[in-house]
Length: 587
Image 1: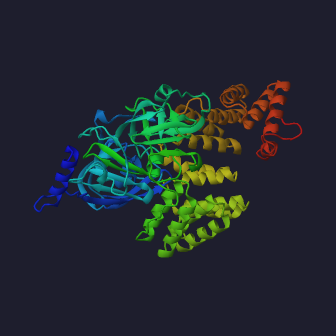
Image 2: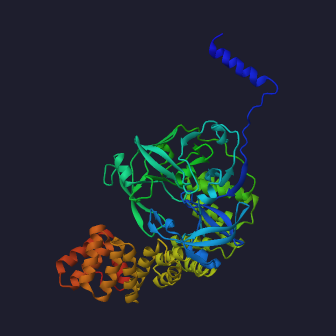
Image 3: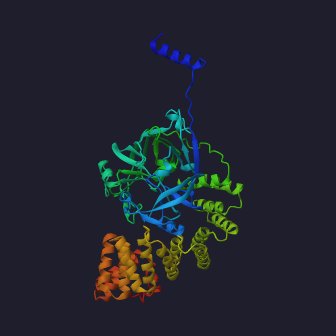
């Protein structure tokens, strides 16, 4: 008998003998947090001083936080936070205050005298749950099924922790201690090592410009296109770019797909944030007990890449795999929202149907089913669901807002206005929903209505990263009305202090200056706006009018002709607001 065969036989014999104990894996599951996806934000419910509030699960935050508005509403006394809590995030430097919560409950577990950092604002949430509460053992992130689970395992081998998968991918993570609990691993972008943090608080995965350059990607390079903005806790929004197909290797898994974003995220201690878009497409357990992260691919898009051009190597997911039955309507609704965000409208609709069947009296299930139906261009069925939701809950402001948008598509301005007014009455004066309600009024060119909603929102959101955009819209709305121009100018100036040089802000201030008769100032702003974003029809029209009124007839006429050629309805809009007196000879 060979040495290997003898050893194998001895092991088998030892396992068969009585009295030989086998180590058994005990996962030691603790609390399970139900998670609801609000867009890219994973939300959980917590009790703060007995009041139930929604929180964003933020695995990239060291400690848990409350928004300034939440702390004020709860009447919590604040003190200055220690200097070490001055953070440098994607949105810039951010300073906090500190509040002590006498009793906080999460997942049925109560904590006494828990400190929260206080600062910033967040739509849909009262704050953020950070690693001081998330990294209490081994943590499973199953956002695709709407759950986060906590474990304290004993006697478990490597694969056993990923109990749902026969062959999970794995990557080693950096060790954690009392002051360093971020989930950080080394990943490979086109063969270049990057230090990456797994961050559910980041909506989308983003790579720093410096790290992307090491892998051969730079803004303006072949196939790299503008990709909106990347935002963080600070007030700055950062320009982002989308990469063409790239290879991202995380441990045993390789993702080859377009859609990865790069941005100037600054000095945040890592090269890359792996965001909620990755978490939704995967099921993960952060095994702090083993310094490893185990994960498996759920299927569907990753980094906005459609599945038909996406290659995920090392994944065991198979298209058409059976979907587990769930216990109640709320579980189906949570899983459906995750599926909807992943782009699986059919799967989401099936889950929402089950939720409605199990609990036909719950208005929210009709609302989320309407969202799924709209992604499938089923507007009539979506409208029926919205009506059903309002029968069950007439003060459901979000449903009113969505129904108003559908009414606008049908050119039913009266119905849209009724729903917008009802939505505004249904929410508190400091509610975040006043901002999207203002956008509804602006879409109908009801500038006074937009200003009224913006007044409420701006007064309650002084530190919000969207403040510059809100000030810009209020500035523009007053310019369109040709009323309150000094206040409009002040709004545009304040917005430009928050976002210097933004083309849309220079365009808005230019219109205010044009209305006020400051022709030179208007031309300067229009020149800057068009240099940053060539071809803005409103900017070309405004500059043309300012030039004609300054005696520069030929230049002015050329700008106006170019504006009308780019937007054939612009002349009628300008005539309607009194910016010009004649379509035939605008001046």
